[in-house]
Length: 442
Image 1: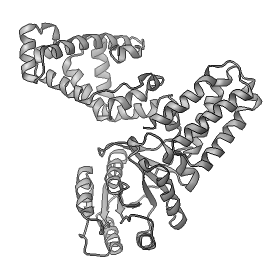
Image 2: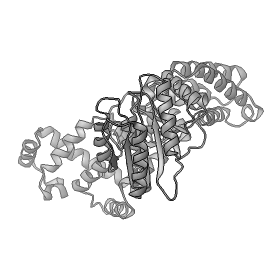
Image 3: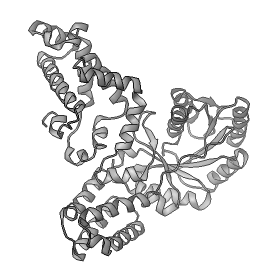
Image 4: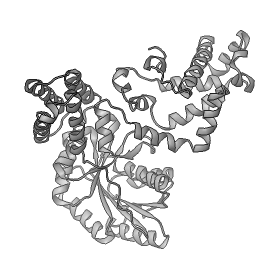
């Protein structure tokens, strides 16, 4: 995400970052490049103007120009102002105790609202241990109720629906009564969308809000529509007092205009971001972490949180013991590969490592290659997975046939596994491998 913007901003600040001394002309030149980068990213013009003016004023301060490393100070200022631009400190939902916490979801058709309901339900269930219900109040869009039933089941949420024959306001009120009766922790209300913001949509939304008295009203906007998403959010803000934004399809947004503009234009923070097609591709939006990603500083906190969700402390200790004692097998490798893949696309994870994102360039990690590796390993006997050194020519031919690959692929896996064990031993000993080692010399 934001690849184009990230590349342009890092290029704009690259010269400044490396200088031991800065002049006003240096700062002005960098700000012109930053301004162009933001405008090309479809960031609101007024937002760009205010942002660059603030950064320039701070960058030309005596504390910066006379510091030992003024270039790094300017980069730090840009990171801080990007963080403020996107909302400053991240905010979570207002969770009610006792429940149910009522969350009203709004948005236009095609924004990804119904899918966002399922993703939010899963997030609340897994991150907060909540018993979640979703109410199907989008009665106008064909198959919207069926879609919510499907994503709700996948998310492990209870779906309250009465088909499409009743008034959505009545359905919302009925769903709230049922959520109270069933003692659910949260109720997510999926409201009707329209092709554009209109009076009928707003009246219906206002009436559902009056009947259900939600703790949070969230607006779902499609990040890929850039400035149009910001315009929609601004229109909603003028007539409906929503509390925060969910950015859908953020993984497909190469520019970043919506993420960088919506808070400044509407005054409402981005609370969550949808970062992929799977229900688990959904995370809290942290402005400071996003600013660091954009500037190529990585996002270690998110990476750690993703890892912690996939591995408990006992598993981590067991893995460390095996690595230190050189008992790490292909079975262990397969299990770790599965856990890492559950964290998201490998390329995205690498870009969260400080300093790695920029070096990756156009490197793409082929997820299908990981499927082939899994097939090869599963075609081995337990003895071969425990000790790949015993895999001779005849064994390699058998494994190749069983996995639908070839002998060269099997040989390459065995070789790469031996190299990986060496790298893991280095890491266990406190030595960080180079990017070239991590990416196999590519």
